[in-house]
Image (tube, rainbow, N blue to C red; front, side, top):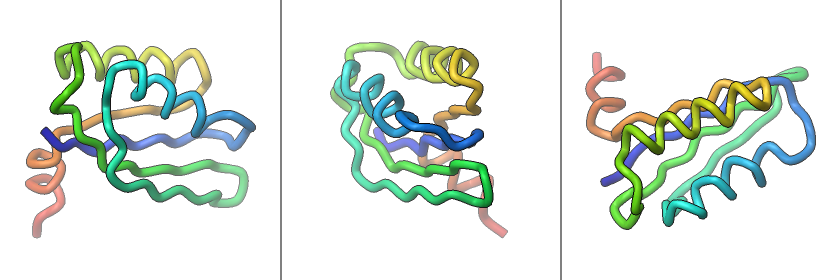
Length: 89
């Protein structure tokens, strides 16, 4: 299943490595990634494939949320179909 991961927070060294490492440990494949710095804020959006992950989607979401809290970031994951439905006019 495809999903969208968003990361927002104050820019610092290691954000991409930290998020990608967590996804890698759960066998989540990154299909596309876009990141930028807006003034002092880091923003990243990733399209990922969770189809081979060994943990349930809700557990993955909880771990990303917890990692974000520990690092002062907002890290969210949403199923692609829900993301698309929310952003249709």
